[in-house]
Image (tube, rainbow, N blue to C red):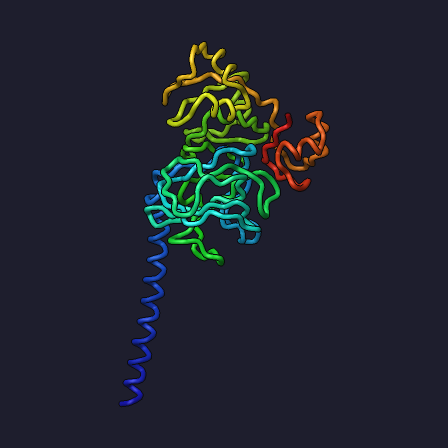
Length: 314
């Protein structure tokens, strides 16, 4: 009789363990499936080119990297509260934001932080500027997402593509836009190398450079004014001046309104996209500059550069 009871108890315990494992697996899957819904209104945090994805470097890379110009504005992907804002030896200048959907985002390697711990931010607020601080080999944003909160072990890390949409290395992204809203303006502005292909909304692959050429934006770009922008901030973004923008658009004053479209002179000749095999020395020769000038213009602390990194050359 005692043996029979023992067998029943063992069988019951085994059934309970199996049930817990099954329920735990289902719960995790459900959480993962909920991420796109929780972040359906999120936007990309910066303009640039994706240079690295989640899970690379033997699984140690727990975010996504976006390379861009030095001091490119970094935006909050959604409303939230700043939980941390400090300088780290690894992250450099870094900002953590807790969002209403219980996810926490991380923005690392910034040149400068605009917010402090406890600040409330709205979607699109500029929380800092792209830099090369901390354990970084080039100007870029390292962006992470964590369930509930960031931890040192990063066991709560989530692949950002679950929140922002499918992405690949070499793909251009636009700040304040979803992943499928890549514009010809941005492609022309970034002057992508001819071996990078993108897909349009119908799934047709095309050369980024040819797409930009076909769009007719070789010598000029079109910029749609966003809320809070000024002629000065737009001129700084495109490496031009307020007077040049006013002359190009036949403006008599500095007044602009959200939603209006400005024609901007294309200054792409002052930018270079790093390709595999490039060195600062080879780029200096191609662009008729020096290694020292390139490092100073791009705030580089070493000679290390990465494919698809954007360098200012003038």
